[in-house]
Length: 177
View 1 (spheres, rainbow, N blue to C red):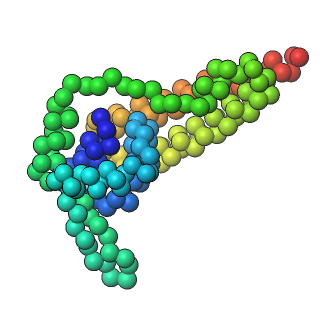
View 2 (cartoon, rainbow, N blue to C red):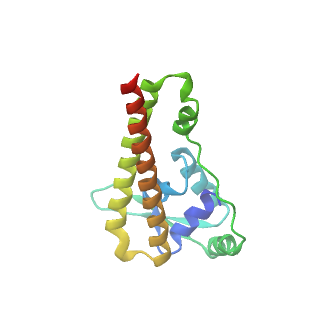
View 3 (cartoon, rainbow, N blue to C red):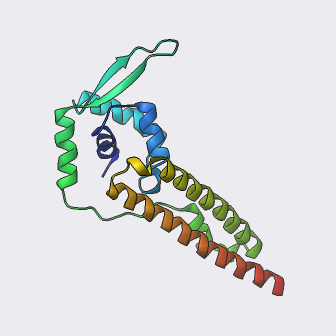
């Protein structure tokens, strides 16, 4: 799976602008796919050059023109080939938090508690964002998409539960010292 496969999948139902693709990657897809902002537009340019997508300039009254991206037959073939290929193993995203937490013994409990609180806040924000997205789009989603979002929601809930337990344990240790 790469950015090209994800973008082609987004365009299978309807045309989208680069901005709409970026928004989907940052919101809905960020739970299970990581793509940097800097790779989106170069990937779109390469895909257009390879004939996987076309770009249609749409005039807008009172607004700047927008480029609407459409999938081509070649793009549909490429995306279908991806879908029919064997599943790839999941890869774990890099986590600076997890790496620092693992080596937390070298910085002391107070610093680890700060990290836990920061991770708790960030995870809660991501969960809230995912729940908002889910409530907005669930009626339009395919059952497979709903399962995908529900997995993400449950992963964040589990992470928050473990962080809360760990935070409580760390704070108890600090109090007893």
